[in-house]
Length: 358
Image (cartoon, rainbow, N blue to C red; front, side, top):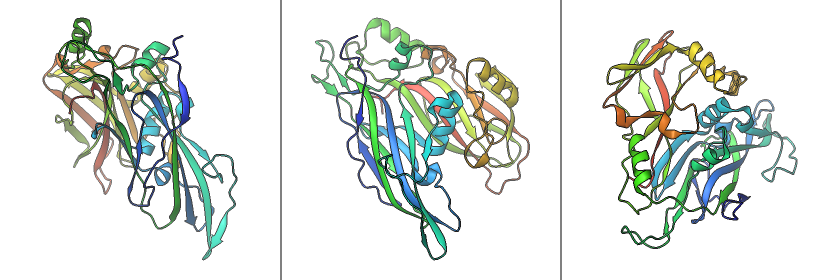
């Protein structure tokens, strides 16, 4: 094995500005190809009873930028729910009554009749996707940050892209003493340059390839956005992305207003039409986690507040739903009821496209 492909796992640069109600930032070193960033977040929670902080209370919304442009956006708990749906082994971990070093035990305190507990959450932000069948495929989804120079094309020698994570630190008076650090897994493999074969493959995947000889960064983007509804029938035709290949769409509903069935149409041709329960059985048949139902705060993600619509079931991103094959995408959703006070569904769409395009 080449030393370039040997994965290292080590401390990341410091997470700066870990201040309640503000965005903390993690600037990753240029030059590596990143497979995973591990966020380690600690907070003290003040409550009437001894209470652990939730994942969202320790880590808020995470935005992953490439050259200052957002490529992934997701709440910590929603990211955890999606990754946990793939495999139980990639779920976030709570270290109860443990300091940020993951070694030192903490002791509950007391003030004003409240218990103050300090605990630590560990959440992995996977860029390469650990549940893919082969190591080669997993590595293909990693995020490179450097490219070798080439005579063809107009870009500088040792072209680099900069990855930054912006992490929202919750602003809640019951949460104090936030602390956060990070670790990462990376190797020294440089990013791909476009050649004729790669350009053809990208075109099939709905990705517009730049000129031959120029760098490209095909990675999975995550788009988080809300959709409001007024009845139990919801039709989505507008999407916050263009181009690329759609790998998966996840819906997070209000408690009680749960998805029961859905239809996916591309240019009015049905691509998926089924109930959520049947779709979940299909996911399990493809090797997804069969035991991820109990989510945070007792939410049953399988049968209640989460619905997952995957299109990518193998190691080839081009085998998913390519936007090159249609002009309009429609998602019709049926809810069992529409009685929640806040009638809004949170969508997260995963789309494989070129991160060097803004």
